[in-house]
Length: 90
Image 1 (cartoon, one colour):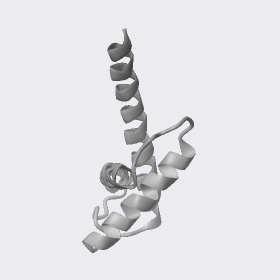
Image 2 (cartoon, rainbow, N blue to C red):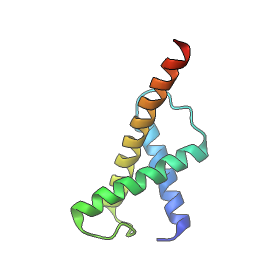
Image 3 (cartoon, rainbow, N blue to C red):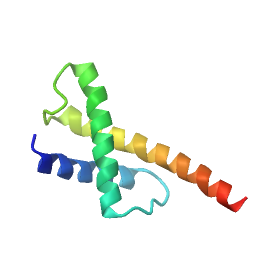
């Protein structure tokens, strides 16, 4: 898979994850793409462990895993952001 396709898939996975996750996420397009790329890598890694296929192949399970990975990363970012935000105002 080419780098450009990996970035586009990361952007799409990040946008879908932000649309699914409730609440407001104030992120730029670059941050959304980075979120999607990290989630795509994480989801692809977990998916490849279950299926035994390469992490770099484009398949439907990889796309679903990318979105789920991006949702997980977005959830963790929300938890960390909420915790640091609460400390600044206390």
